[in-house]
Length: 110
Image (cartoon, rainbow, N blue to C red; front, side):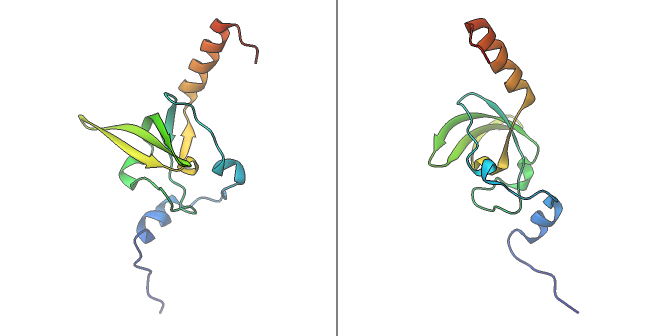
């Protein structure tokens, strides 16, 4: 009988497993400051992974630090800042519609 792994992420990454692998486009994804993003952990890339309690939460990009982003998330009544790699972030649909509306008002062609 084989023993179950007892590493730091062993329980958390098993719950997050997906059939889709990470691509290079996921690594070089760009976000603008103030954009809404969804925290979606990818178990295949453990660097700058947010804690599993923040899975599925929506946050706002505050700044860029190196290749990662600082994301402001509301945890109960407290505001928290998380450092997340772009692999673990997904652009929110609401932020895309807000950007398009802002570009339309400014007269920018898409």
